[in-house]
Amino acid sequence: MKTDDHEATPSILVLGIGNVLWADEGFGVRAVEALHQRYTFAEAVTVMDGGTQGLYLLPYVQSCECLLVIDAIDYGLAPGSVHVVRDDAVPSFMGAKKMSLHQTGFQEVLAAAQLLGWQPQRVMLVGVQPSVLDDYGGSLRPEIAARIDEVIRLVVDELASWGARPELRSQHRPGHGSQQSPEHGSQHSPEHGSQHSPGYSRDHQAPIAELAPSALALHHYENMRPSPRDACRVGDPRFLARDLGHPGGAHGDPSREAGSERDGVTESPVKE
Image 1: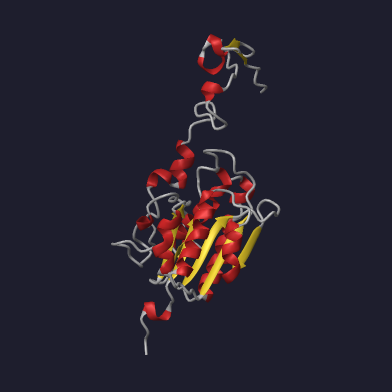
Image 2: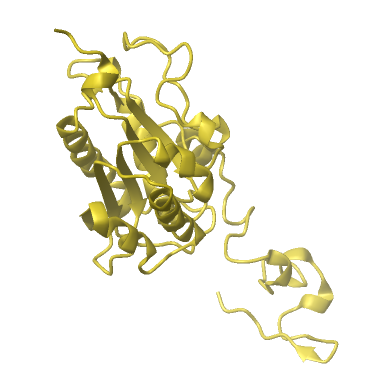
């Protein structure tokens, strides 16, 4: 007797969380968007960019029977280390050495879901040790980005054991002429996160549905980022006495010259 897809596969949520605006903290988002670009899954599987949505993710977590989370986690290991945590241990790791508010928020999501009666069959956290976090507007560092393929292989193998039936999209199958780079992802309203949006076809030829607004897609985000000179990422340039070749530092204000005194406060030169 042939079983329906939803009967054969438990409801699975694959969730990438993090903040792409802070360098390696965006790992979970970039990994899940790459997974979405490369694979399709059974109808019962939802692949979602959770960004930093926190408690807004609660109804999605409550509705799944199996949860797999990808995130940047400070395990205290060497940068780029991949570490897997399962089931009851997951909430404590989401709260240990919190790097940002998104981790506090997701720890609360798990606690709230359990208080409301959520009893998942499986929970798995795939965490990568970040290298750099305090680079606003920066990219994943190369040693962290290099772990995306490894994490995708690990995740796909795990999902296959859960009955998710992963299949490579046609453009990623051996012998296909071109491969696409990850294109979509980051913070967004959760309703954009479903793997199967209206009009999506399982014939592997239809356009790939977006996980998030295209303005924060990887190719757009990387190609449109202004240079550090045009968009200072280490602080407000109005308060940095940097000598860029004209009086008064960055903005030509003589009163802001390095070493000048204003309102009784001496400003020391900023060493490059």
